[in-house]
Image (tube, rainbow, N blue to C red):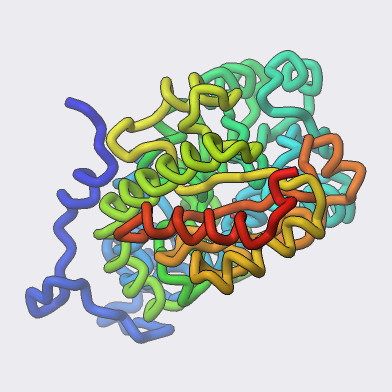
Length: 401
Ligand SMILES: *Cc1c(COP(=O)(O)O)cnc(C)c1O
């Protein structure tokens, strides 16, 4: 039987205490016990189905975590108060002082800043590589490499990571392959392709409403339990727990994720073709000329398409700014960071989400200062949106030169 992330979620049986079709929201920080011994057992992780304190586990968070684990096909998951919390807690749980990480040079700006600036505090060394160059990845590996870190589809260049190949390299060195799958939920299931840990910013496509910030870590039960160990678990001790009111609202949104991803992908493919025909320098993994097209085609669950992200290159930051303002004036969408929203969002990566990345590194990444990243929305009439973009191009003559 084919693994289908949406069907996995639909097969969950999650009810509230009165048969509520949506699980109850557990609005409590602490929990009572009738027997003192059960409390002791719970502390030691030996009492099935008991909850102790909401920094450790909250039932509402457990429902959402179970849905994330089902979607990824992992044994377990844990939900966090942000995507950055998922990423930083995962990394800090794995590495010790003196360890080494190999990371894609194109990652989310916050992740890059954490790896490049923050981990120095702990004497953890990071080598940045072009993650699509497997020889470079191999050459960067050391005996003390504990993590290969990448994004399935990297931000903002939309490079595609060859997860099975990276997994093979990681396994040779007994390292963990950690994959941020924020751009491609449902489309790619990194854990099924050999990733050891999958991290998410649920702020983006998974929640899809831009009404909160949240994250998730999907992994083996052993890893999740180690994260929340009362004595040594990074998540338990740093405490980046998600609020249960939020997790219950995200859980409801997950149930429409498969429909949304298909529409984001359909609309993005449509625009990517139109952009190309109009002569714009266009990067979209669904186009056969994209360097990662073949790798993604091999890895993906095809029915969800190639995702909602497109990057176009206008050459200069000035042209990018003019074009984005014009598109906003013509109701194409919003000039805003973030992604996975029902409206189309666009931003100039170099001046926004990748501004933590120094200019010379942006240059090494092949990132132009005129790069405009689109998160294509759920527009019901994408042809109408294209007409508005065309009008924006026309009004800003010179954009194409
Ligand atoms: C937004 C984002 C993050 C950070 O997530 P937050 O929820 O904002 O903390 C990490 N990785 C990627 C790829 C992102 O797009």
